[in-house]
Length: 261
Image (cartoon, rainbow, N blue to C red):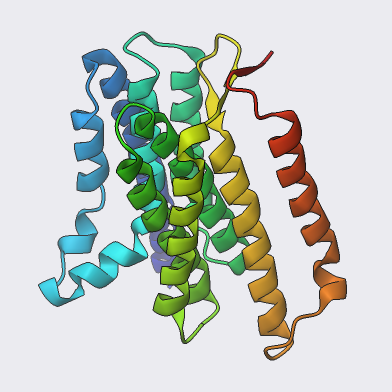
């Protein structure tokens, strides 16, 4: 029995190590291939192929699996698209994207607690909205409106499912519509903050939506804890934080070009 337990533990350790290495390779190769080829196709294909388990079941469960994996898809696709937008010459941003995606795959995505569900959703909003802003500036408003609807829906559903919310789909659709509306209103004044010559950037819209989604999750959590009633005392600090961040961004950091050195 002792030998069996030892062998079992060894296999589990080997399996975990193998899984970690594969995730690390996915992060490095998907971003690296995008930079080397100057094309995002290979990186996007790798992201989709890495989710092969979604389709390894009866086709009746495909849509359910896709919705459950939307946050992971958004983060992975956004990292690849941001790497593509940064150019075909390796910059600090590309290595930052590799490291960030590896951290996401290895340490953040596997967690299943409510706290990590909220963290995962907020990361998807921040990274996804930044990528949507970058590409919307090169295309049309429909790109950012549709993208934000999907991002808002996916982030909301990701958290509500964890809390066993009965009206998950409806509330998430409303959240998606809200994000799409904010994106549409912001389209004519899209602002991206650049960090000097590193190539690292983040959009103002992404920060605003991330902060607003954070407040939304706090309110939902508070209502859930108090059987449908909202305790203003408990959400006062998050509410003040949200209002201050939004006000500072709009009033002080809304120049068309704002570089953070």
